[in-house]
Image (cartoon, rainbow, N blue to C red; front, side, top):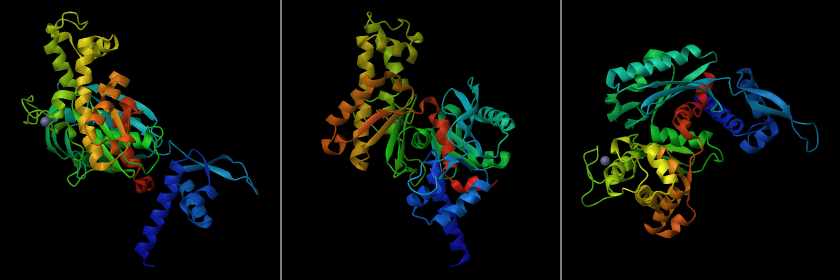
Length: 396
Ligand SMILES: [Zn+2]
């Protein structure tokens, strides 16, 4: 065998063993051999290397099914740390995250209207502070950024709120910190975060995550891998046109995009505009005082006007999801973002709309649920891209 091929096989086997250890709390060498179909000798040799790296330790004794009781191996979850950043809200949030997605330190800096070069300085400020707190080997920096992102090259093509255009963020951060950097669109990050750290997902399954907040985006995971698209911009569903005639102008320049009728911003706009016609509504009568919190309160109190406008957003989201399911036949749809505050009724209305807008057959087994990683999904997903690249674990 040529040297390059041998090294490739070695890396591949090591990744298989690591993947199996990551997927289990505690596991014996024999069980790893059974799952990976590698020989026991190969597994033992690889495990010895991984233990020497400090990534895995012998954590206990398992039950014997004949013969000696097996030694159980477990991931040393703090053996490597990562820095994760969520730039998609009106504050920048950064955290130190370990290999199991536990956050060891969180820093939040409000944006206060900063954009362009100033926003970049704020980002450096957070990373500088976090780097100073790191006292374990640092794998790299993962960023979840809003707007249109070329994830392959780590370039923010256009993030309107931050006033970033064609910003080579991966390059800038690598030049400054000299460690690996991964930049994803926020919805793609949330998808891979849910897949890696959300409860109850098996490794190879497919899912679509829909992030419904100020804007709307999707992250698509196919057979366990994030699908980024040829240009790295897969999942830009917020600009699918859903109102054909007389739709509102969208920030992208088109009319009637999904974002103009189903995002948190669209809902707030509708509530502010409509409240004067519903004097009995418990919303504040001064439109300027209406925000998502007030709408959430009124929704919980069964305010008829608010229920109507909230559930109207579900109709459009359901339409778009049914199109996605018709194309991909993916059976797991996860919803995250501010709008999930409307919970089950909003979710059920989405499901109903899906069933009325498309062939029922592909939809019958489709499950729609709210994500489990909550407000941390973007930070966790941004770092998950680093964890999933097992070769990085060995550069220390
Ligand atoms: Zn648009």
